[in-house]
Length: 99
Image (cartoon, rainbow, N blue to C red):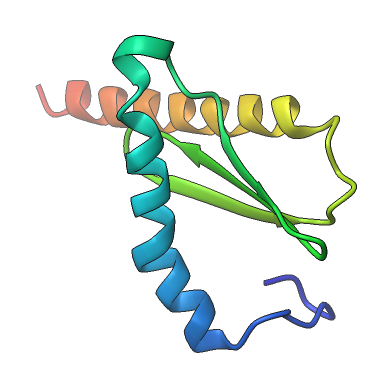
């Protein structure tokens, strides 16, 4: 959570949603992957918040944004993927150093 920004939901509700509901939503959308192709992102737009889900190989990254944010979603997704690639490169380099 960003400092100085109050949450719309109670902390326990946030934890429950992040650990239970979010993975279920993205996993359900992934069921169509063989037919529709790779998912770029899953978005849920409420009146007060826009939730954006990005799946990486190791993580489910979730952003809560102002509801009017739209144009930056591809850019955010590209940044998430670059972070994953950088992490993969570090692991590969670390594994090679041990040889």
